[in-house]
Image 1 (cartoon, one colour):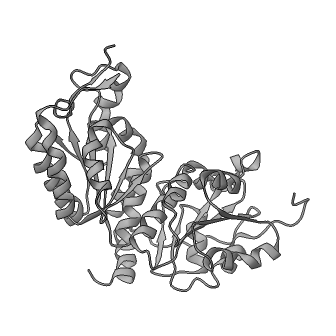
Image 2 (image 1 turned 135 degrees about the horizontal axis):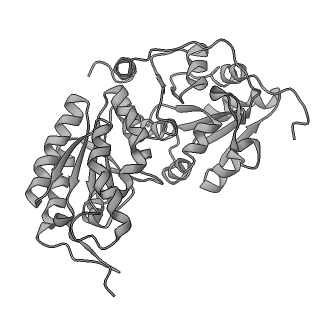
Length: 178
Length: 195
């Protein structure tokens, strides 16, 4: 099992990192994903960004709320399979109209080699939207930064829950060939 | 074992714990913890949960990271803590010195009809906290323990977790605002000023 090398689409990590700084985000919470590796490494190397590894993604929803109460802006980075773990927790930003910004690397889309990823991959958008989360789907590499900027504005200026979904075709497909 | 001794009374435990609250920020989990906090120590610096079970403790961690100069106390029930039990290992890894947790453990889901909870049988929340990497935990079973709670929670560096073994029942519930944006605005204005 190996991660296929990310192809042309690797530049989004740098762009999103710059936008994290620009937006004044200083708390990044995550259950990691291979596609997030570069971005998380950059955040880990930045002394002004506090990176917190979670046991389950919904903790990041709670942490973002607490951080906002204390004047800090947070970002939750997760794989699509973890979006399902967040559902009841998303009642919190919906109830409080508080910012909840998420960056989701998609599995279970075109080229997925693991059938167990397909159900949640298909369900991310309808389920998130049912909980009031605005989904911005980045299907090409330049989309990622554009949508991240838009999502951060919506979250922190308007108090919305927003997920930027990075399509599997942008990240590269995990290979299961032996 | 408590050996049939009288169980602690939840609002008395909370009142004693908050005697020296000072300028602490307090997060309460949904249900009776929120009603009790509002009854005992209503303050704009309280973050009352009305939902999102399991997330009061992570919210306390986010708040503690955002406000490192202020003590943050999370008051939560045993069901709430069990649902978010993994967050104890997240907190232990972060080791915020300003975070304290008080679990009001009545060993049941009292709000929904007093069904037995997991801490009624084998699960020991203080032991789980130790196994998650907490170094300072205590279990309060009698009034002498309750007398030590405030110091334990506020007078030493965190993260610390106290479990108070309380009996069932509480006084008449009193409810803080159910208006989420208003709760956020009130808290942020008190802690951050108008920004």
